[in-house]
Image 1 (cartoon, rainbow, N blue to C red):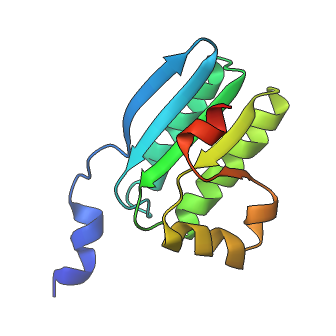
Image 2 (cartoon, helix red, strand yellow; image 1 turned 90 degrees about the vertical axis):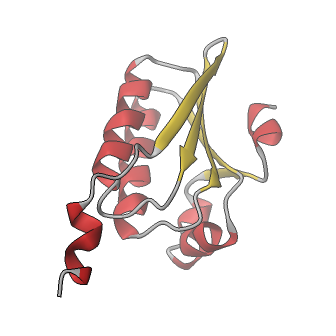
Length: 122
């Protein structure tokens, strides 16, 4: 009976594990599933990083095995804000499931996607 509410009742770990800066470039390491229970915190943290006006923000999704539509919506909102701020937003190291989700929604043509962090920084 409680199983259905489990995801919403626990306090999930932060989605952003680390933010690394290289000059005016921010590299954001994300970990774990990005779903409804974590997408609001995920989005708010990314928007706070954007407020610092990096020239480029690389979102490293290597440690994200799963993302649902709320996570994708968060990325779209962050992309919109990044464009207004003239910040280049790059998604890097997508897992096959996350890459597939962006392809199905045709957002792979909207986002700049790099195979790995090194390419995203180049």
